[in-house]
Image (cartoon, rainbow, N blue to C red; front, side, top):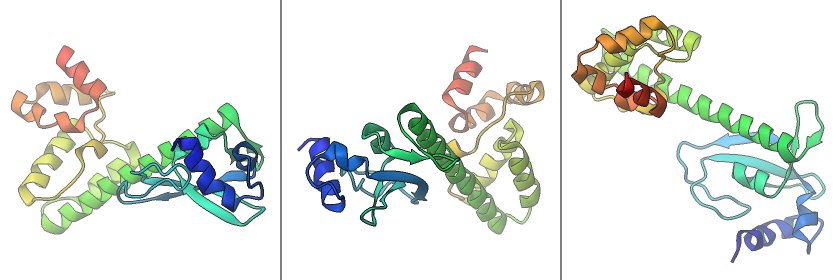
Length: 206
C-alpha cells in the first residue's frame, strides 16, 4: 500500500469528502499545535510512518476530528497552515512555518535535556555551582569549551546521564577558540561528541 493509499484510508472517514483525497485534504488545517514526546515512539496518524517524536496536530473544523502527524506529511500533502496573522497559507509559506515550528520544538527539547542534566548533577555534586551554569546557558544558549570540559568530567565522575549533542559549544569568539586550542589533545578529544560536525572539521583543519 502506498503512502497516498494509507493517507486516504486514515483521512477520508474523518472528512466531509469521502472519496477524493485531494479534496478532503483541503478541509484540514495545521493550527500550530505540536506535542513533543520523550522519545520517537508514535506513528503518524496520516501515513502510518513510525518513529514520530514531534506530533503536529491537524484539525478538520467541519467534522471536529483531528489527527497527529509528522511534519513532513503537512508539506507532502500540502495541508494548510494557520499563519501568525490568522490566515491559512500553503506552499512555501506553509513549509517555512512548519520548519520554524519544528526547529523551535527541537531547541526546546535540547534546552530541557541540558537543564535536566545540570539539575541532576547538582543533586549529586555538592561542589557544582548550578546557578552560574544555568544563568550562562540561558544568556548565551551555549557553553565555552572550558565549561563543557568541566561538565564532561563531573558528569562522568558522578555517573550522570546526558546527551552530549544537546550541549552546544560556542567557538565564535577568539577567547573561546583559544580555550580549545590550549587544551591538551586528550582533553580536547573528550569534547568531540559535544562539537558539531562543522566545528570538528574546523578543528581538525586548524
